[in-house]
Amino acid sequence: DQQVKQNSPSLSVQEGRISILNCDYTNSMFDYFLWYKKYPAEGPTFLISISSIKDKNEDGRFTVFLNKSAKHLSLHIVPSQPGDSAVYFCAASDSGGSNYKLTFGKGTLLTVNP
Amino acid sequence: NAGVTQTPKFQVLKTGQSMTLQCAQDMNHEYMSWYRQDPGMGLRLIHYSVGAGITDQGEVPNGYNVSRSTTEDFPLRLLSAAPSQTSVYFCASSYFRDTEAFFGQGTRLTVV
Image (cartoon, rainbow over all chains, first blue to last red; front, side, top):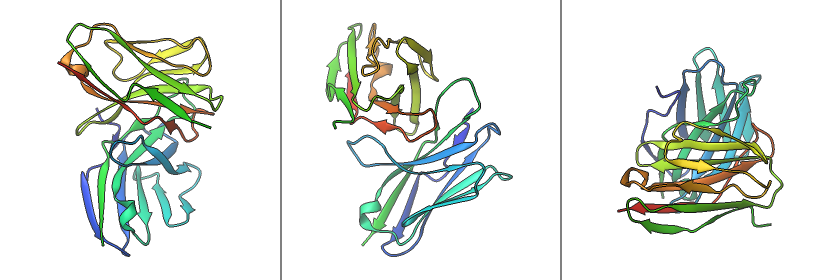
């Protein structure tokens, strides 16, 4: 049973426009969420995170929104740039649990066209 | 500051062979983990460690062993390689359990 779902395998946007990547989770114990970006042949790199006590976190062009009642979060990139083209992974953890682990979604391939 | 270093970057094994994927970090992180990435499957946790001497299983631990004798190193051992273990393997480390994890560049393993 997939606990973190990224239902869109791919997304294509024009340079300068907004990119919105979505993520849904089923485990109500998850209370910390992260987004990672991955370029081909490289390891994932951390992008932005949000705790369940917040509903929004912003870092430059990147904003993550969390809707706990819907168990949904989204990553907004504004404005999108060609260098943002990568696979984006949503990840979640249960900070109160006894085990440490991040649960990842399958990823969304973002393509930003010039 | 090298971050997380994985070796080798590429490896081809024959079915039944054993090998160890190396992972080292120089950030004094307590938490380390191994993931595999397969097409359409995202990143799946194999094993993780919350400190030297302490390891635990993740989502897909079968066929893999780990140990953590030092804070810096977290090797992943394949005891008897199978074609189903063909994948890209990533090692990650983090300071606290829920802070950002730093990933290595990955090891692309092919088992024939």
